[in-house]
Image (tube, rainbow, N blue to C red; front, side, top):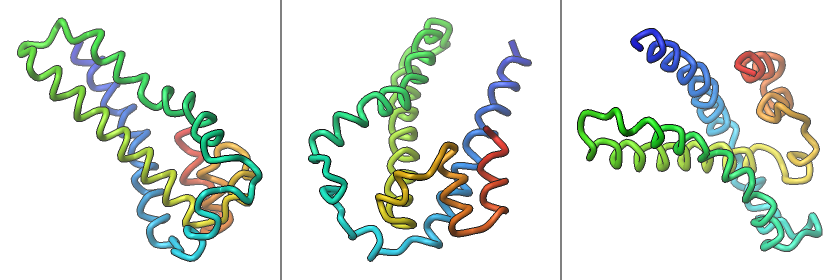
Length: 141
């Protein structure tokens, strides 16, 4: 069981470290004028409510890991810790998701961002940071 916990910790860090580095780099490259440009996204020809609907499956996928934590909650020593951990996990995932999404909109314009191939963080860094950014973001993938 201890080995599984160690592997899980390493895997989590391998996912979060590149995201954290991306957030720092995106903050440094953030341009308020780019962020404010067509903030509602209407220039893309898609109404705001349609945009919200289109992101719902992605949002669901972001939070699917929380369910996995709740499934094993029966093994917790203190049941109150499960609720606290779940709330912390949801808020943390939401924070990372919002930071990555909103900061990306301040680095490049929406139409340009929509054209970037996956992994899109790597494409975003290539346009602004060169190959170092692409390698940094592609490594965990």
